[in-house]
Each structure stands twice: as structure tokens, then as C-alpha cells.
Amino acid sequence: MATPAVLTRGLAGRQQRAGLAFALPAALLFVAILAYPIFESFRTSLFSIDLLTGDAAFVGFGNFGTLFGDRALWSTVGNTLLWTVVSLAGQLGLGLLAALLIDADWPGMRWIRQLLLIPYVVPVIASALVWQWMLDGHYGIISTNLQSWGALDAGANPLGQESTSLATVILVNVWRGFPFAMLVFWARMQGIDKAQYEAARVDGAGPWREFVHVTLPNLRSAALSLLALRGIWTLMYFELVWLLTRGGPAGSSEVLSTYIYKVVMGEFRVGYAAAIASLAGLFLGAAGLAGWIVYRLRARRDA
Amino acid sequence: MRSGRTGRSLAGLAGRIVALALIVFFAVGPILWMIVSSVRPADQLFQPDPSIVPTGVTTAWYEEVFGSGALRWFANSFVVAAATTLVSLVLGTAAGYAVTRFTFPGRRVLLACLGVSYLFPAILLLVPLYLVLSSLGLVGGLVGIVIGHLTITLPLTTWLMKSFVEAVPRDLEEAAWVDGLGYLGAFLRVTLPLLRTGLATTAMFAFILSWDEFLLASVIAQGDNVTAPVGMAGLVTSFDIRWGAIMALSTLVTIPVVVLFFVLQRYYEKGLTAGSVKG
Image 1 (tube, rainbow over the protein chains, first blue to last red):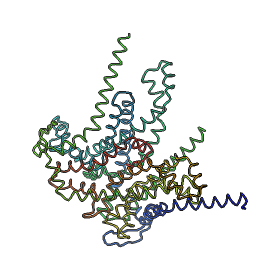
Image 2: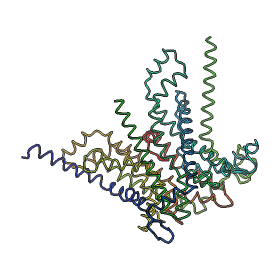
Image 3: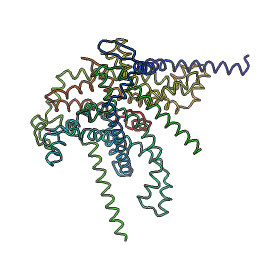
Image 4: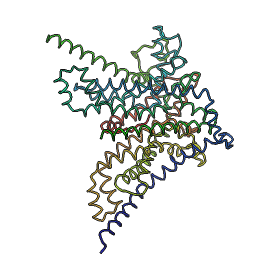
């Protein structure tokens, strides 16, 4: 007969081993395809590597020095911030408006909600191609109409002009991303206690004051988590910009992700690309850590 | 007074309907235009003043697409997405189960890594992943693409399955452990059947993510082994752009995803709000 203490320890040990066994395959794969490459990325940033010849030379922090003198990179950083801020504002704003509009018991509303999710569901390649087609300067339905109204030069494509390319890509990004914000806001609205609205109505609040004093405060946490998650992904989002404009014309819609891609795939400067990626990763990590600390501090203060 | 109020609320109602109609049009219009363009004859597509109302329907673009090498791209995409889904579902479910049910050394580290890699943008992984794959000789093949896609789907499936396992009552398993079924037996016979909806939801997201993925596939895939998004992206750079065929391909690449979305709609919304799709 074992004593209870020994039994517990034996059981705990068996449980530990079982847990390890279940977790091990995924953990190993994590290390192989995520942790190791991320580590390798930092190491690579200290080298100058030519992808064609495979030559690698240790340059220390030389790549980072190049980075600070790279003017194209800094205008790209400006574009990236603009792209992120305006995209997020548009997605959250339109998403909130749509969430308010679908928050009614009208017949068929379930179907309308699903239709509104479509831009988010459609593969990004299909979205990019159909927008390119609609914006085509000679036969596209949007561009030809804009041209006949005089809003666009004859034969011009909004994606192909330096003055409008970034704004157009942002517009398509808002189109693609607003349904997600709508769904998150709408789901949160379903959880708002009806008594809060009744209390507001008793106080004589109209629809607008109900919205400002009841709905909006309840959506704050949803908006914050949307900003944090979508912020990270939008900042480094590659597909849409690349597929619509390749960052052009003349770098007018270049963002960090397309710039990194070009440095690797176009110029084969792997070490330099790794340096940009490492710095962006560090920046994101620091921003994430700061956000997390603020979040924890506030949670502690509120508790 | 009363008629004034009903008048105002009627105007408000009309405003809501118009606003809703505009937003639905904005959301769905481009997709409808994609489908319409894929069945329009060439002379209607390529006129300087395109009309919205289609007259006459053609299947010529689809015939062109089915007669081309594009089918191979779709087959590649399907194989890659299916393999990615299978691997990430098996490993992700086991890991999600482990971190919910057991305490073991490294559990917290694994959870932290999960969170970080879930947020980690794919573009930052591009260079190192490419170097690792090329040193293994996996650049250019479908296996390489699957590995690339696993970096995106594995954190997600683990994360999602963790939340689904949490919803399964623990005592059922503990009874099975006591009955001598063992940990693996209890998991396979008791827990797994209860996770069916979770598995279906997670599998759908993994499949869609892999099916849609462009960035990693565009770097890893070569020649005949390109996936559908990579192959399609290459069509627009040519001088004579065949928009009808491109719209047919776009419609075809959209169909599986939209079908999955409508069939599993209930779970889709739940998975989305759990924060499961990047980008």
C-alpha cells in the first residue's frame, strides 16, 4: 500500500508525462518552423548574404547602418503608418455603422448579415483581381464611369496614379476588413444588458444619447482588442497591396511588407531584408509588450 | 405631435433601409461583378462604355480555363490545403488538449510561444523560413508549401482546439482514467467524439487559410507546383490581360470557400469572433 503522498506524486508524474507526450509533436514542429527561423532571422541580419551565389559575409550591424540611411525605406514607413491608421479607422467606423444597421429584428436580417460578411470570406486573390478589373483604365466599370464624370483622366486607373494609388488600396482594404469589425461589434451588442437602455429611456434619452451613453461604452473593449489585433496584422499585411499595385507606381503605395518582399525576391539582399524584418519584429514586440503591461496595470487598478 | 413623431420615425426607418442597402451593395457588388464578368461575351467585356445589364451569357471563359493548365493549380491548392489541415488538426488538437488538461514542464512557455507565433506576421518569417526550406531542399515542391502554411495554421488550430477542449467537462475523462482506459484511450474514446464540432470548425479555418495563402506559396512554389492564388497572380502582368478568364478563375477559387462558409455558417461566426483569421 502506498501512502497518499506518494500516490499523488506518482499520479502527478504520470500526468506530466502524458501532457508532455500530447504536446511534444506540436512543440517540436513549433521549434523547427517558427522558433528556429525567427532566431535565424536575427542571425541572418548580421550577415550580407547573396541568394544567388550563396555567399555570406559577416557584417555585424552594418545592415542596420544601411537601414538608417535608406530613404526609400523611411518613406515606406510613412506609407505604412498611413495605410494602417486609415485602414483601421475605416474598417472600425464602417464596421460600427454596419453593426448598428443589422442590429434589428427585421425579416431576413440573418441573410443580410451573411451577405455583408462576404468581402471577408472571399479569397484575397479573387478580391484583388476583381478590383483590378473594375478599376481598369479602359474597360473597368468604376474607372470608365469616373472618367465620364470627369473625376478621372481618360484612360487613367486609380491604382496606376501616384496621387491615388495608396488611397485606393486603403479603400479596398476597408471593403475587405469592415465585415470582421462589424461581426465583433454586433456580437458584443447582443451581450449588452437591455436594462441599461431602459434606464436611459426613463431618463429621457433619445436614440443618439442611447448610442453615446450606452452602446459606445459597452463596445470599448471590443474596439480595443480589434485595434490591437488588426493593428499588428494590418501593419504587416502583404497580400492586398502586393496584388493590387506591387507597391507602385514609383513606390507611392509601398508598405514595409512589400518593401521587404522586394528586397528579398527582387534584389536578393537577404541579410538586409532580415535586418528590416528583425527591426520591425522588435518594434512590434515592444509595442505588444507595452500594450500588455498597460492592459495588466489597468486590470489591476480596476479590480 | 404624434403624427410628427411617426413621420420622423418613418423617415428614420427609410434612412436605415437606404443605408443598409448601400452597405450591402458596397459589400456584394464587386463579387457579383466578378461572377457577371465571368459569363459575359468578350465584345461586351471590352467596350469603352460597359453596361451593367448583361445581354447574353457565355461559358467560353470557363471552357478556356478548364482547357488550360490552371486545373493543375487548383489540384495543387487542394492537396496542399488538405495536407496542411490534416497535420495541423492532429498536432494542434493534441497540443491543445495537453495544455488544457495537464500541467507539465514547459507548458507556460508553450502557451507563450503560441500567443506570439499566432500574432507573428508571415512577412517577417519569409526570409528565415525560406533559408531553412532551401537548406532542406524543399523549395519548389508541395511539401515545402505545406510546411510554410503550417507556420500559419498550427498556432491557430492549437489555440482554437484549446478553447474547444476547455468546454468539454473534465469528469468524463477522469472517470475513464479510473476505469483503466489510460490517457490516450480516454482522449480518443471519450473526449474526441465530444470535440466533433470544434474539429469541424478548426478544420474549416485551417483549410481556408491554406487555400487563400499567397505570400509564402509565392516564394516557395515553382513551375508546375504553384497554388491557385500564385498562378492567378501571374496572369495580370501579361500584356494582353484576359479578364473574362481571370474572372472565371476568381469565381472558381471563391466557390469552395463560400460553400464552406454557408454550410458551416454558425461555427464560422463563432470562430471569427474567437479571433481566428489573420489579415
